[in-house]
Image (cartoon, rainbow, N blue to C red; front, side):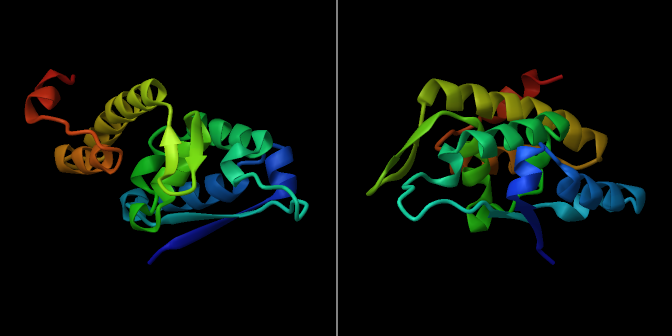
Length: 158
């Protein structure tokens, strides 16, 4: 089913989250929000000069747009298409990092620790509200970033 959310430069500069909000509100109204699991992909249209070597996650305006989006929908990682690398790209918008030509994105380790734990708590609560068993999903999300969450950790969560 995949859903591509198109975001343009004007929307980014205006912090206009409407492309995402309208899609999510429509699914919430139909009671189908959980059908978004690993379905969203962002297509960002942000023209740059040919000599601009930056990745999209290195452009402050784009990062700010994603910060605003994450504050509005902190559970959005549930919806991102992990197989297409969308979770890693989304994380790069929110977590300080560097690019390595041979190894790809290198996240700041302490910032990534905080991000993963924060998303684990947020998603654990949100998934429970949706009546979705969450441990395996949260473990899989953390494993993408090299974290191994133990079952005993989940017993500590409220």
